[in-house]
Image 1 (cartoon, rainbow, N blue to C red):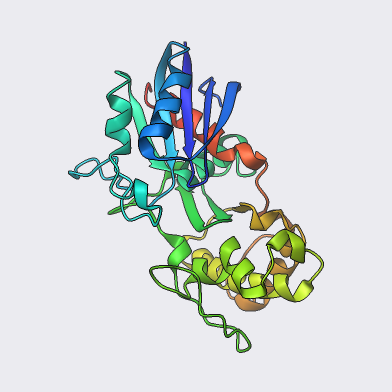
Image 2 (image 1 turned 135 degrees about the vertical axis):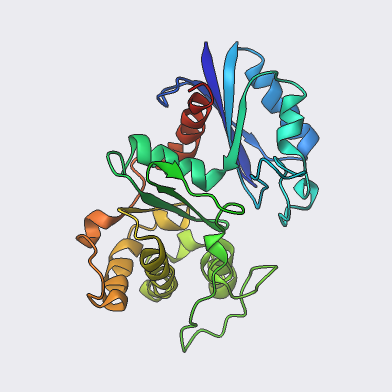
Length: 286
């Protein structure tokens, strides 16, 4: 028997059948439609195989407090049809097996901590910079959770003195996500990021904000490694800019390892989340 994994994104769902060690046997991608349409396709995929547990990593915010009346819900997402949607309950109507539910970035952090760029370490931080910005952390080998999951993409940052852009976040305007996620880059500069690859000033500004956020995470969590994924981070020229700016910000106040080894891209690439979801499913049986 195999495990199931779901990486639920606002644009696409990735579903996989595989082993608890993250090995993928079969994988599909589905366009994120309405909840009813999407869940039906997810159910049809998993019903082909006799699976013993499912791990879900979902876009958010979500409720991961098992004591809450809305545990397993997607809550205040700007994706209107999915707001306040009982995701976990919808799956349990079709599958009488253990189902683990967490954020997409938390399961990606788990995947990278287990099999990727942070394997062998006790802690790491995984940040996705793409359509939105989110972060998940593994601390002492466990996914970080408090009252709820971290929402590190919505911290407030010092504005660059020459940046007059109002910000894209529907809740906070010029938070980290509102200034630096893919849609903010496109709206600020009038072109998609991929069309701006050769324009250093675009990526220096993005790195200015990313480095500020990383400094705060380093000082608060002190992770052993930071992994930066997502569509924006596929602009590989960002990493040297970030390394330069974080070194200046930290200014030798605390020890950090050599930056090319400390702040890195995901070793599992675009599969970090779905592999982490399979690993999360395997933990349900331990």
